[in-house]
Length: 114
Image 1 (cartoon, one colour):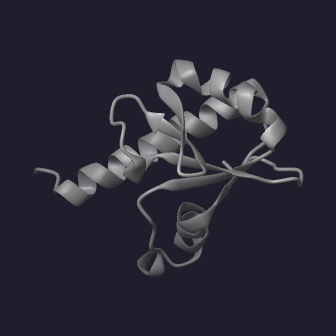
Image 2 (cartoon, one colour; image 1 turned 90 degrees about the vertical axis):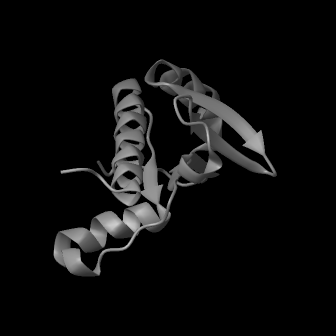
């Protein structure tokens, strides 16, 4: 059985999300998955046939944690980039904005969801 292009992309996106969340959790840095991926995970638990997701990962973080986040995710293969007003972490193995982790600053306390 061969994987389709979509299957490969979805597998790669989930692998990026797992590396990102693991790196922050191990470093003790609070974060919150938001956006399309968070909606997908929530809906998928209740009604898998209705679950839809987007092609990137969005995470709410405290702005004051940005330097610590950059250091924590480097060993996991991420490179920080700031482009067009957006802070993001690019997967060094597949450096496209399409599968990046977009960092959204939040003044509120963030708690890990995975």
